[in-house]
Each structure stands twice: as structure tokens, then as C-alpha cells.
Length: 533
Image (cartoon, rainbow, N blue to C red; front, top):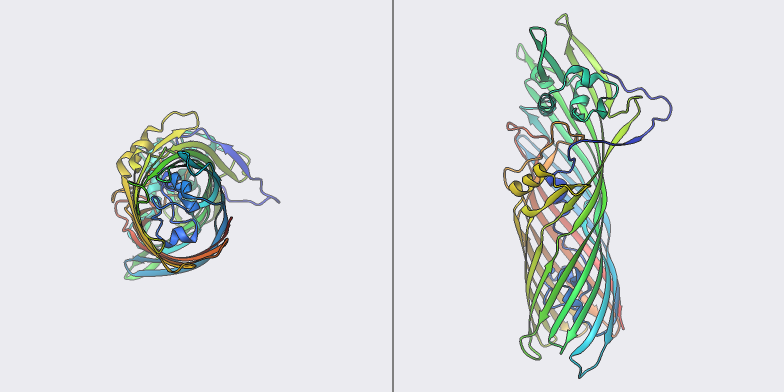
């Protein structure tokens, strides 16, 4: 097809429902697993270790029985700001980024309805809470000198699809369910080139074989979040046993715009020469909804016990996700023609329909998260001190990926089983009241890594996905502290959270590609104001 991009007035954007293998990867699924440490400032200040203590609106999403502790109505809102810091290390190159974001963290209410002082059932409480479960806001920048190239993956996918030149050159190439979009883009930009033996097509070679070194740069802008809407019902029995249930409804909104560039160099008589380069621009957006149910209980071993024991179980969350992708390549390369002379080829190619208009794919998939289990302890010393510890476990390898018709994606689900693993979260926190109106809080939690060290992003040989990059996240730690004021009805809390974790980034899947080490250090301040009445 070898077409250059021609702008004819306003370029049409057409959404294509594409009959191709699954587009969702385990990295897309992992984005929906787990939660950030987020909610009220009191909850954050105590490191989220409030599952057995209860009495905070955020607990309806961890242990729903915590709402049964309430004996008065509550209405509140939380907001704040975050600074995301990223440091990337690749042999010979280090980059740093810092970005500032505002945040609206949660808002909700609890209605406490008193039944009586002598009846077994003392209170029936109702609650609603909106919470930003995860924030995806992040900017990325990294680069280095590679001895391999993304064009190798382009060629490998094209060869694996067993298609010929005519399929790549066809006007309706992007509608052919046997052809990888990355292969079409690579062929149109001279990054994937055919070779012949005895007059027959032998396969496709990557362009980078013309160079000895590759200078690569990756940039990405991610925005959006996973939002949770919780509807809670909780009961207080004898002021000793508390039960609760929460129905959680989720809304996903995630967008990533990224570009990955390679510039090639080779040595000629000891002097470095350029062999051209390209930039792959990717757009990926996913949106959808999910639902789950959470059940929990809190028990005091004996009347007026300062010790509380909590337990909760969360059903799988059932998501239906719609994903959109599109891509383009800007290229400037030297191509060997039929006369064995290098000719410069410059231009742009893009995902397009048979009329040459911009086009994006649309794919609908389902994701079922694993069960989640929670155990917690709380201990109070009078009204001056509250201590909490909590343990949570979910086996991420049990994640299931399905087509929209409910049929299991066997390859992708098997990838989840082999590349994801069980995740443990440990939380600890304490609250000390200096005087009855003022409190000081500290907290910590640790989340183990969700991925195996050898995890990678698998793209089928006929995939519409062209974003080859992926990151394997390591364990994360959160350190928190906060302060709070309680008046007769008005209250205000302030919390600071420092989050840090490492990840290994790969621009594409290649055994010769050295990983980029990424160190994330994020700071966040959250303020909660509310009324109890």
C-alpha cells in the first residue's frame, strides 16, 4: 500500500468493530485489580487499617460491617492534590519527571437509625460513598541506546500471521482479521520489508538490521481513574456484633497517548552515520462498568471489649470493558531499492479504512477479578488511642478474561494464571487523641507484587493492538500521617501519604532488550470535611 498520509480537509474518524482475537491483555486486567490507598483523610492517615475499628465511611469498601459502628448520621467530602515523581534508569541514561495533579477523592453519607437500647438489634445503618479507587494520572519519559528494535516484533508478528505482501497492500487491509495492524503500519513505513528466495516470498525482515545501534525514546500521557460507588447496609447487634453488606458499582475511564521513537546509527570507517528512524504514535482508551458484593462482620469478644475482630469477603468484580485503539507512524528511513541503492523514504502512515480515512478499533471484552479476603484487628484504649492491623489477600492468577459473548479467552486467561500471582496487603495504623478534640495519626501498608519477574505483554499475530510497551510492577509501600479535629458536629481531617514502588519497563517484547528501571515516589495530601448529627 505504501500510502502517505494526505489531509483532505477534515479527516473522518471511523470506529470499527473488528472481528479479531482478544485485544485485552493481562496488563489491562491488572489495571482493574487492587486499589489505591484512598478515601477519607482519617482512613489514609491510619494507613487504611480500620477494618475492625469501623466508624469511617471508607470502610464500607473494605469491611462493610464498619458502618454498623455509627450511632449518628454523617455526611462528608474529601479532596486534595498529588505530586507524582518518576525516575528512570537505563544504562547510560537517567531521566526524572515530577507532575502535579488535583484530586477529588470521595464523598458520601451515613444514616444511622436507632432501633432501641434493650432490643438485640440496636441500629440499622444505611450508607453511600463515592471513592476514587484508582487514579491513572501519570506522565512518563524514558530512553536509552538499544541493541535491538521494536521493528523485530513488527516483523515477527507479520511472519507469524502467514500473510503475503498483497494482504498488507490491500485497501481493506485493516479489515482483514488475519493481518496484524502493527504489521501493516510497519510495512507501509518501510520498517518491515519482504525478502524473496527463488522468486518466492521468504518472509519479512525488520528495518533495524541496517543499523548497529538504536537510540530510543518513549513518552506517554495517562489520564483517568477507576471510580467506585458503594451502597451499604449494616446492623448493630447488642453493641457487640456488627454485620454489613455493600454493593459496589464501578466505572472505568482510562486514556493513554504514547509515542515511541527509534533512530538508527551505523559505523562507516569508524564514523557514526544515521540510517533514519521513526515514531510510533499510539492511542488507547478503555471504559466500562463493573459490579461486586462485599460482606463483613466485626465482633467484640465480650461486652465493652476494647478488642474488635473483623473479617470480610469480596466477591469477584464483573467488568464489561470497551477498548479503542488507533495508531500512526512518522518515518524517515533509507530503503534499498531494486538497483541496490539506498533511497530516502519519508512520510506518515496510519490506521485507516478502505477510503484512506483515520480509523480506530472498538472491542468489547469482559474481565472477572478474583475473590478477595480480609482479616483485621482493632484495639482501643479508652477514647484516647485506637490501634488497627489488617491483612488482605487476593489471588490475581485467578483473573478471567472473556469475550463479550461470555466465552473465555483461553490464551489470555492462561497468561494470567502463569504471569500473575497472589497479592498480600498488610496495613497498620494508630490514632492518638492529644485532647478530646484533636487527634494525631500514623499508618503504613505494604502491597506485594502482582506479577512474576518473567511476565510479558502478549499480542496475538493478528492483533489490532499496536502498543507494545509494558511494565512489571514490584511491591509498593505507603507511609502516612495525619491530624484531625472533632467538634460537636463539624469535623476536619488532613492526611499526608508517601507512596513508593519500582517497576521494570519494556518498550517492546524482545529477549535482547534491557529493562528500564523505574522508581516511583508519589506524595499526596488529602483533606476531609464533614458533619455528624
